[in-house]
Length: 400
Image (cartoon, rainbow, N blue to C red; front, side, top):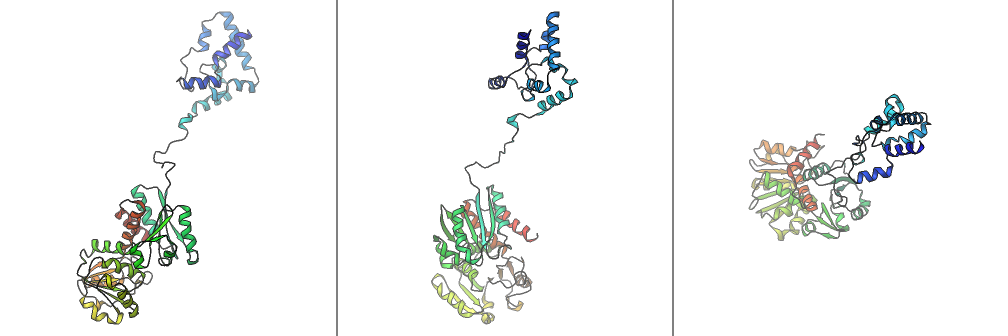
């Protein structure tokens, strides 16, 4: 009788080793009902003596210690055949709960969903950023984050507040952390050149860097301000600059980038006007070999303005929060010319409002900001910058 009980126990229950062998051989899921004959059905065809012995076995199992019963009926190893004691499981609430939990448990291969859009493990996200002091006002993070998303590039663009006395350390960090590149804004555009491995010829002549590219630890500085501005100006307001007479207000760092790029377009004359006339004349003399330049003080504008085709303001006059300031009087602005302002906050400065009232074509600094960023993005990624997505992101960020 003991041998037959053991025989039936071996027939009704599967060991962990049986489970693994069965799954590897392609047998049905243990959670599904087996196609093998039910031991209870098998006993129905047995003789009275055998049937009695089966009933006695069931009663013996029902009276066993609960800890022993649980070992025989481990819910994680559900039998392929129905054990005789399981026939009355619905009458045992505890065992019914164990069976329900076993049936509801998901298969291991379905427990962790796979992310089909995840980047390969050996593909590092593109690390980008901008450094400056201050930096919280910058719209570059919003613009470049939109560009990365539009191109489907995994990466991040973050702002970093870097004081002047920590600039060298910050640049060393670009190498150490594996940044692909960064933008540089005020007041670091000139000083940062001392900590780079290479400086592009245009940036060297301009005397300022606003974009750094990291190629395997070699840091190269570029200036995309000027070319970004010219690209925007030609697309939005003045498609032809060759042979034009241009007045540039200011002769600081921003003016240097603009004038250098402007001279590549072969205008007839570029006049630099500054509060300190000598500074304007020095820049004109420095770049005399690149084109026809002149320098003057602001007091000489009444003589210069009637002859110009294009006015470009590179000063900060009229920038937020001093939005009511203007570098020129309305009467000084010739009618019907092109007037451009590098400021993009506000989008329409006091200067542009006065110029528009004089029938002029106006051009704000938003385009320059977007295009200088576009050139930097293209150097970092080798991809065509999504201009419209970048522009929309900047505009949205300005009204948040």
